[in-house]
Length: 150
Image 1 (cartoon, one colour):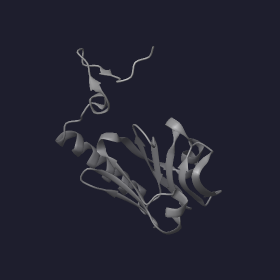
Image 2 (cartoon, one colour):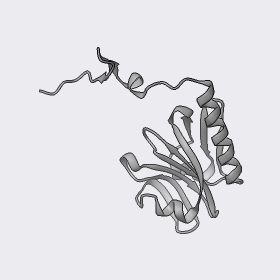
Image 3 (tube, helix red, strand yellow):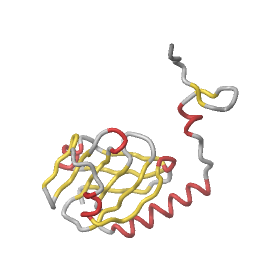
Image 4 (cartoon, helix red, strand yellow):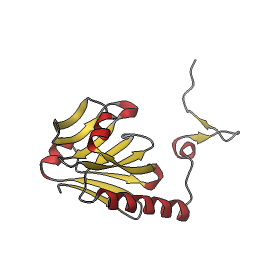
């Protein structure tokens, strides 16, 4: 498989090789477990039906190939699917992608590994508030922006 999905100690890594690297315009994507919401196995048809139609940048051949970024903004997805019937779909929070759709040799086994690692990461490590990471904290504990509107 030219597309690899690895479960690491801290998260997931999606790696592209060969022509898929050129089509996806990236070598890999590292996603920490803090951003992973969940995963599931979907049929290719269902995954395509719930996906944006606009590749940016990406390559596709109907029914055979779908590699790269699809959609813009909050609906943006990273795809790495060839001619298989099933794919692993990983739902994410934040940007740049809200969903990663990857075809691997054994989709069901990959899904079980992701779920087990995600559960283990939730038990072992404390999750940090996104507000605490992105913004400064005011007196009431809410995130405040450094710029004010006038």
